[in-house]
Amino acid sequence: MTPDLVIRQARIADGAAPVDIAVKDGMISGIAPRIGSDAPCLDAAGGLLIRGFADSHLHLDKACILDRAQNRTGTLKGALEAVTAAKRDFTASDVYARGARVLDAAIGQGTTLIRTHVEIDPAIGLAGFDAIRQLKADYAWALDLQICVFPQEGLLNYPGTEALLRAALDAGADLLGGCPYTDTDPEGHIARVFGMAREYDVDLDFHLDFDLDTSWRHLDEVARQTIAHGMQGRVAIGHVTKLSMLPPERLAESIALMKDAGIALTVLPATDLFITGRDHDHAVPRGVAPAHRFHAGGVCCTVATNNVLNPFTPYGDCSLPRMANLFANVAQLGTGEELSACFAMISAAPFRLLGRDARIAEGTPADLVLLPGSSAAATVAEIGRPLWGMRAGRMTFEAPAPRLLGPRRDAQTVRDYSLMSSGR
View (cartoon, one colour):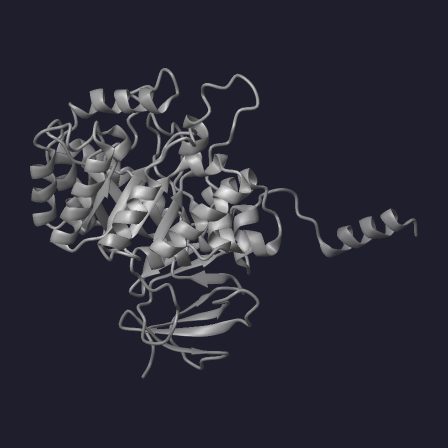
């Protein structure tokens, strides 16, 4: 069968020899060292080909609002108050436009799978959810969007919120989130969302333990409920900045607890660095949970964006390699093995967390992204920007490498300079 397209000389794993990949009717129809065909071709030039990056924790509904919401204190409280005030004026069209701006950027950075959290409460109603649901449909040409509805400002303390969450789940929300630290009854909040998750048979994703006080935490109750409800492998927790302050023995206990409960950990370095430690005037703690320790201990770990240009994170370009590089800097990781693990936390691990297959194989969709380097570690070390992407064999973006326009250096000039440098 004649392919529609052949991708020439792409690497599909670190250290692997380049291969040709045939695409037919939006699917990968063949992988071989050399595929003889007159079909149109793309030269990967030995670059690394992946299924794309996956952002396991993003907030599309409150992105890009710095023009109307400022965090004057830089604290979590300041961010929550600023967004609460701004949210009263959100409309579906407003959320859609800002979310589209972020998705456009994410696609150009090679992201093909996103879990977005959407705030649900009586102040915003279902306007944000309706906008994100429309974005999910409109951007299906380039990526998969998973919608997690959650009560950012509490559940039991905010009458009317549960009914709205149920309405969103009835209308097709993919999963449910929790935020117990904003509720007047955190453990009741945890119990209620677990009950709803079982009722609707959806996964859970918590914002959890977002401070540096290790004298208390909600992780233990979430782990207990996960096991009690038989939801191992279906619960994720994000932030959990308390974990950054634990001594080795208590950290090891936490790793074992999460592994036993099958809970995934998502670390959000840009937000966690910006928000935490504001009460310190020196020796400021980083506040970033050591995801690499949990990864090494067998816990599913991801690194994600969280917020873009809002009071929680007043910067961002949607580059997941940049986020993995930031985490590597904070965690002081530099070996090839360590950087490859960071790469896994923005690719294979979040694909697994979100229930998708990251393998490139015959018979799988031709959803592909080409990276300029030949290894995962190089992508993190150099913050490699993808060169192009496709979905079902159709190109979704192109970002070719810059073409330098300086004076030309011919081979003779280079040779003469080499001779001068060697003293000959």
